[in-house]
Length: 307
Ligand SMILES: *[C@@H]1O[C@H](CO)[C@@H](O)[C@H](O)[C@H]1NC(C)=O
Ligand SMILES: *[C@@H]1O[C@H](CO)[C@@H](O)[C@H](O)[C@H]1NC(C)=O
Ligand SMILES: *[C@H]1O[C@@H](CO)[C@H](O)[C@@H](O)[C@@H]1NC(C)=O
Image 1 (cartoon, rainbow, N blue to C red):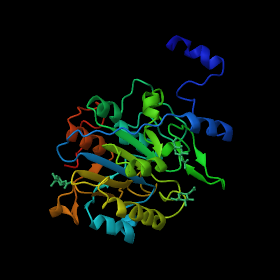
Image 2: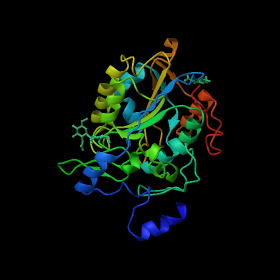
Image 3: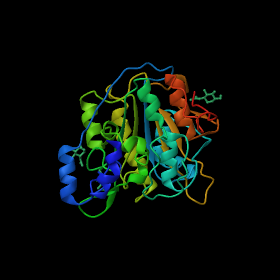
Image 4: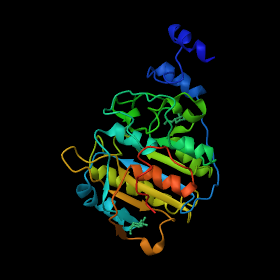
């Protein structure tokens, strides 16, 4: 089959990495009607937690985020990591680094593809049977690979804020695209008690603060998390939530807000701070140690884990 791919491309038949890029309304409607969606679950015990939920907001320095009343409130409900740094600027390489422990040479927000031999955390999770999903608010259907605007013409979903979408090892696999879903699917999976063990959530361009303000992002985060923290389909004694930002402002030190929440935070540590130096590479490292996954041989090897 592989040898026919160049021929298919010549004939105008899209390959997996580009088949879901059209934003024409008929193409989107057709894909929405047929695209595969999967909601895998599993119960692989970790050493510190059995579920890891990552939520990313946008473009705010630590000092500004922690001064926001809603984000300060959330920090008081967990452990505030007061010495946490993004990797670089702009957005996209930070998201890419969160799942691949490397920026993989990406230095901009453009439509980029990372070769299919490059692995991410989902290769390691799948090898140990740990279920995963990505939830991106306002993605029009599972596996969509482009950017999306709402009916009023405002951008709501962007590929550059989806950590897995630049990796051909994900986009060439329909079963992996089927786990890159929208927030409608999050709410369905939540209601059906079918949330996975590893997930990454990106709110839309308004709610994450990108096209709005820190007060909108802080309010969204508090309103989103408050009911979830008392919902046993989401938060158990073994759930760890990490709320952070992709990067700081381009003029700052790239220190960002970073808070651990959920039942896996020991009650003795609720409301405390931790000044260990962490960065986005700590995300893969923490997950690898927790489930005994091995590593990606990238910056995860030397990164500091949260526990
Ligand atoms: C979310 O994705 C599902 C599955 O592809 C799709 O049926 C649904 O229309 C999408 N929701 C929105 C609001 O775009
Ligand atoms: C983002 O989502 C909210 C609902 O959570 C919605 O009110 C808002 O219009 C969306 N923003 C865009 C740009 O679509
Ligand atoms: C942060 O502090 C370091 C150093 O004291 C500990 O080793 C970590 O376990 C701690 N991490 C958390 C999440 O509290």
